[in-house]
Length: 224
Ligand code: BJW
Image 1: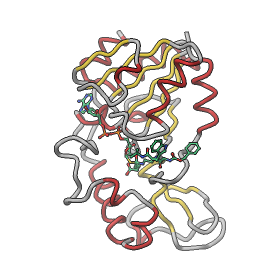
Image 2: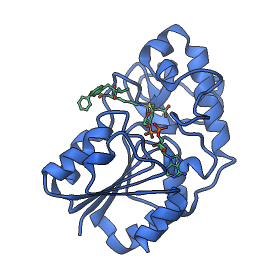
Image 3: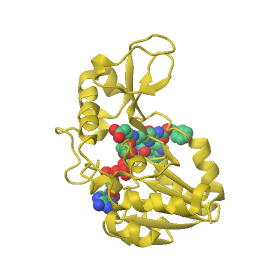
Image 4: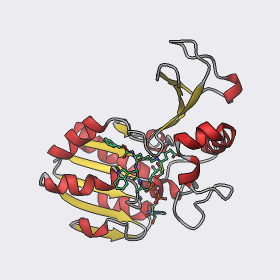
């Protein structure tokens, strides 16, 4: 059985990573829509860098939770028949043991060269980052996908949605496209669809089945 799992901020919430749109989801009073845009980076690069510096620093203090680990166990069983697509830019799936993970909104621990678009590891502070190894340009930005930009790996994701038997969405509000549209895409290709989320998402009615509660309980229950 081929399975595509989409994860969002809710899967990392119980690890201590704040979500974007829940009650505590603001960062120093900013909505994500105000800092996660190319325009915000043009106008106030220091504010945007501070937002990502803080989240990068916070990564060292958090650990994968039972939901991340359950998906790693599922990968041991399904192998290549499981694809985890995450909107999250943390590395908790990988630290939880998953190996086949697509980060459609980029990664906190990666830098993107504004000159040639090369992606390279984010090492230390912004001031310590070496110039781009390909073009020598020093204008590096967080390697994340902001509003108005095209998410990574869309071809691979849609190919997997086309052929999967089951699509499972975990811990995402369904407020941000194109990820919010994956459920309808998968269903249109014939997959069964399941939502595992704390509360009903914006798209909950599109799923064949929805279970509501904390991911650390629902995901192991579903996997095991
Ligand atoms: C728990 C829990 C627990 C809590 N257990 N659950 C169609 C219609 C309208 C607009 C658009 C459209 N198509 C595109 C757009 C524009 C735009 C968009 O969607 N705007 C909306 C606001 C309407 N989209 C884009 O611009 C995207 N690009 C694009 O569409 O390009 C065109 C194109 C695409 C494809 C092919 C060709 C062309 C880019 C979107 C980029 C989003 N970027 C961000 C920032 C990334 C970097 C960063 O992390 O800083 O991504 S915004 C932010 O939202 C982040 C997240 O990945 C994303 C989704 O958030 P998520 O994960 O769902 O978190 P929350 O907080 O919203 O929800 C958490 C959920 O967890 C809640 O439901 C809780 O209940 C639950 N939860 N605790 C289980 N313990």
